[in-house]
Every structure is written in structure tokens, then in C-alpha cells.
Length: 109
Image (tube, rainbow, N blue to C red; front, side, top):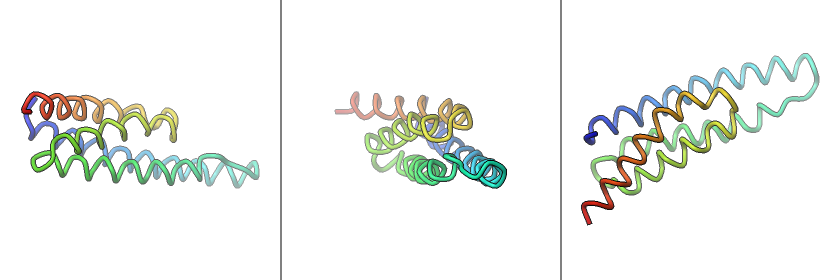
């Protein structure tokens, strides 16, 4: 996998993470309205930060491959933890991109 593919995987994973995070916020708002309390609202804000970190990691692929790999990898691991099943699809994009960049940076040394 080359750097362009890692860039697009990181960018796509971050954007899909944002979309699913907004859906989780919507779901949390409805849940809070109906039942009075929701855990999706607080965790969705953390997922939004992780999605933006994934986009930043995708943008740094060419200049700092090791840092970008770790940012995408950790964001990919964190999204399913904070927005549950909504984070599984972004994880499928972010983990391969992150692992590829970490391995590429390790091999270039």
C-alpha cells in the first residue's frame, strides 16, 4: 500500500467517523429526551476528537509517516470504544492505514 492509499484511507475513515459520530449524537439526544439520561452524548464528543485526529493523521502521511500511522491506529482503536458499533466501519479504514504507515516508517530507518 502506498502513501496515497494510506492518505485516502485515513481521510475516509475520519470522515465516516464524523458522520457516525453525528448520528450517535442524534441518537443520544433522542435517547436522552425519551429516557432522561444517555451516555452517548459524552462519549460522542470524544469520538469527534478521535475522528479529527484521524483526519490530521491522514494529512501527515507524507511528511511524518510514523506520527500519522500512530494517530490513525489509535483513532481506529478508540472509535469503537466510544461510539460502540458506529465506530466499526471507520476502524476498518483506519487500522490498515495506520499499521501500514507504522511499518513503512520502521522499515525506512
